[in-house]
Image (cartoon, rainbow, N blue to C red; front, side, top):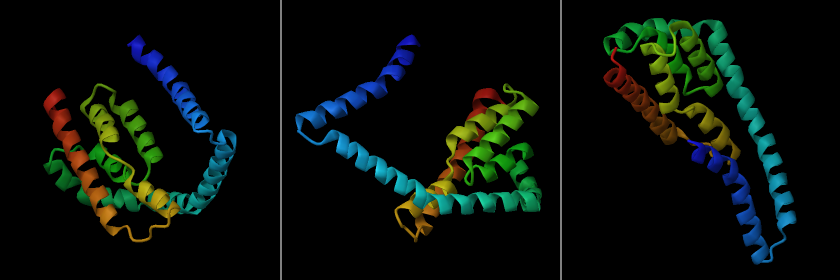
Length: 177
């Protein structure tokens, strides 16, 4: 384990040194290129801000209005039939929208049910098996100016559904229900 810890400490500085050595060998203006990259990063961050703000406001409205609770109430009987605990449903619905909100829900589930409970383990595996699809599409596609993202949304949500189903199956097989 200490080998991995040592490698993780040194890998980033070593990569930077390799990049600097290659740039110096090619006689490139390294510092000027670094400054230009920093300028591009700042303009990218500013262009992402409206998309990020819109997404965060939408999530807040969904949670504060009670629409999320109503939706969970509608689909919980069907998901219980599939073996998915009702406590996990909010996490599965929020995870594609917001990673931070999903992490908060996972923390709450683990605090409530315990880290070694089925729900705690399922929440942990689900958190790592799915992605923030709407966040990725909104922020990254918005940053590069892609407006038509229908197919990417379908594939991303399908991957999330498969990740959720795989989480349930794997946790049930390994740890039992």
